[in-house]
Length: 295
Image (cartoon, rainbow, N blue to C red; front, side, top):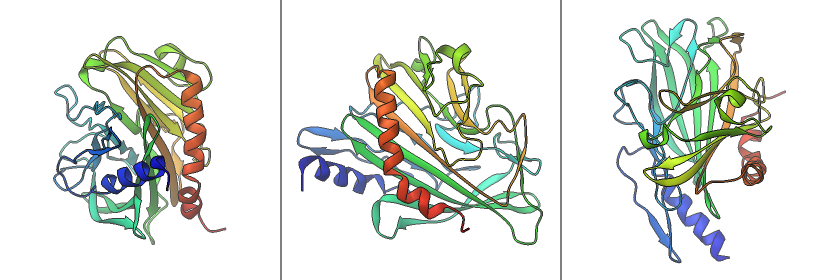
């Protein structure tokens, strides 16, 4: 076994400690420290989410529940379904209720959670959520797949929402100013990326004085791919992969969405982001194939 393969496997073994809402520990291999992400599930009121995501130097890039938007939780997936608001967290909002979680077939790198999206009137949809962690040379990679299923005997779910609803990411406060968005098609800044359709969108900024780059990947099998991106940098920075549900709602009994997130130390050029995006597509081939609806 090569040193890189051993490093990757051991890092993945740490990444699966997801259901415990407690800080996960780092692993040191050959002088390199690998930090996993922190997925909060046990002590949440409305939805499980990734609270922290670390670069390989140990720099966290996510912010949870800031005072200006308490419902912004690090990296989270939320939309509106059948008129129920699962994005905000108000007394009449819906909740993503954790049901169970376990490693997938004993594979350390893949973790599966069952959830029920519920309203005051009962279950709206069920979800199988897969979180997968990878540690490649120089980059931390995370895959988020949400497979949503309508309830037998009930109408086909109607997915809708605001232009920022989807897989959203709130950055550290120190990353709110002076950063730059850029996408796979050469768009830059908010003006060149907001509302655009592209395979990926990235953001470079300083996290507590340390330069970092974060990219979100859309998978080509996702409905309405490539994703429509929501970006903003005033008064704070935010990035979402969306289905443009504000323009056209979506009706589907089964909806599978696969996304990736990559985090680097330093300012990563467009060419490198594209290279890692292509690597990620290969990494998730088995996951995407297993979640594909039967024909």
